[in-house]
Image 1 (cartoon, helix red, strand yellow):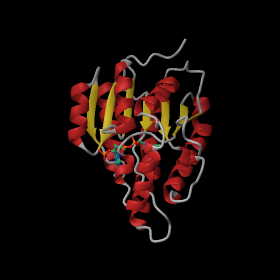
Image 2 (image 1 turned 120 degrees about the vertical axis):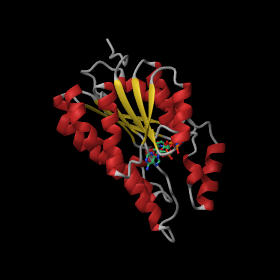
Image 3 (image 1 turned 120 degrees about the horizontal axis):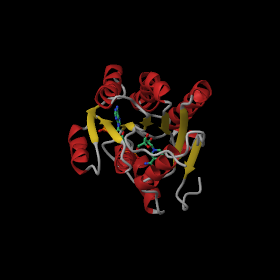
Image 4 (image 1 turned 30 degrees about the horizontal axis):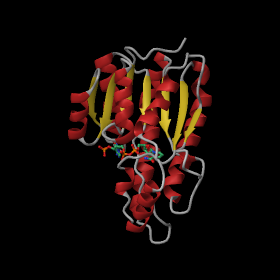
Length: 245
Ligand code: NDP
């Protein structure tokens, strides 16, 4: 029998849009108590308002360690435990190495890599206590490095390495570690690409295929999270059928 999410406490980062928002909604639909974190409070307030179950918005900047700790503390103090961390916040400021604004690299490393690591660091004592689950949003860029996505791929390869080492440290203590690697998914992620040529290429790629929808990735999260506790789904790579790479 699968694990029910009813009454489980989940913390979802990057819940104000795209994949994280759909994950928060899906978990809430399954009866989980969801702490939804991101920087844009207005978007989170809208999410709280449409939640099918209990969603508690929390202001979270994963690049700020005190904010990370505060979000974990909200989950534990208000709901009594932490069963599931969905480490999803990320930015994709891609473009060629030549002429890149290295501040974009620093932001991606601080958000996608260090942000994920700090979230896990703060959540882990509670996940060990609850025999909980970490679900890490990585990317196909965590497996395949493509021209134009060097620093982004470095953060996703990095986070894959971090959580694989974590898995080896905690799996026999009952904490499950899951990596989800989405392919091209319709969201606002590409709209933040600073380089106009790279942004246009991403838009062109999106219009050339049937992309995934955030719901498709939320489905993968629910699949992994509802397996019986002795089943640890270590890795899920989900690509659009039309995506070759
Ligand atoms: P979105 O841009 O829609 O979502 C990104 C989320 O991350 C937002 O909720 C944003 O919220 C949040 N975020 C960004 N920076 C921070 C921060 N410093 N602190 C807290 N939250 C932050 O894109 P997606 O839903 O597509 O992306 C979600 C994840 O999926 C990312 O990790 C991305 O790399 C990954 N992914 C996406 C793919 C795609 O094709 N869309 C493919 C593969 C992986 P706010 O700005 O309000 O803080």
